[in-house]
Image (cartoon, rainbow, N blue to C red; front, top):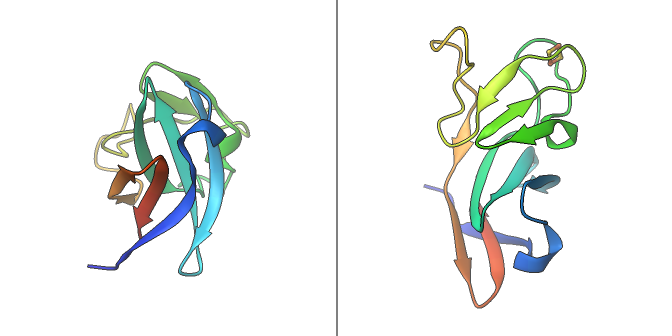
Length: 101
Ligand code: FES
């Protein structure tokens, strides 16, 4: 497994929001869901829409381009559960958010 890389501080992503970071050359969307952080690939499975710019409702992100919806913790598409975003381990240490990708 890849090493964890620091992407930001906890305070940099508001509750219910997301931001995109590049980790080891991969575009990763990092989400703050009520203080727990998750990471998925940034590109939507449909046509590579930017998921970090999507609306977040509970644990679901909606792609801003055409509305595909994903469960953030598992990366699963809400309708077609076999379609799945890549997800990445996240940990918080000393106020820093770290992603292994
Ligand atoms: S690119 Fe995400 S729904 Fe079309």
